[in-house]
Amino acid sequence: MYTDPISDFLTRIRNAIMANHEKVLIPSSNLKNRISKVLLERGYIKDYKTIDDKNNRYGGQQILEIELKYATNYGSNREYAITKLDRKSKPGLRKYSKVKDLPHVLNGLGIAILSTSKGVITDKEARKLKIGGEVLCHVY
Image (cartoon, rainbow, N blue to C red; front, top):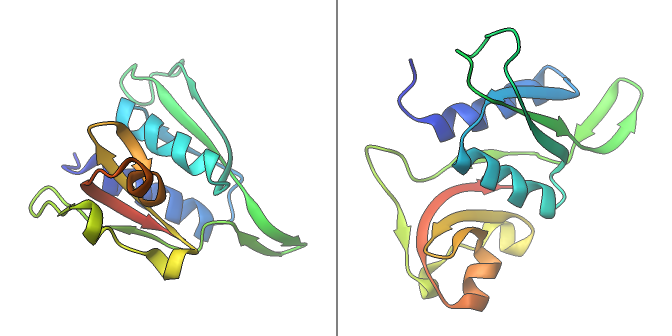
């Protein structure tokens, strides 16, 4: 079993992109749903939904189905909207950031996803709200 569900979540998305899959299935959790919502709002994925595990594939747990989005689609030369997913805060070494030290991912072209007291939000929203938090990952 894996010990870091967020790393597993990001790795499954990376692997689906590398294998040119349209959708990826991931065991669901509240935090993964919130991260998926941020990715959808920022245009990195096409859609996501939570479905029941009818085949008992994940031990009866609900499944998060993420539909990946293409930036360009020229036959076999597909380019996904997500170029890179980097996990920053890990269970062995948590990365917290104050509002003045929030990272600028690719000079503002990418996003940092944070877990804050106001929920899971992007670095830009955290600056507007003037709050810091745990930097979960960078997406670009």
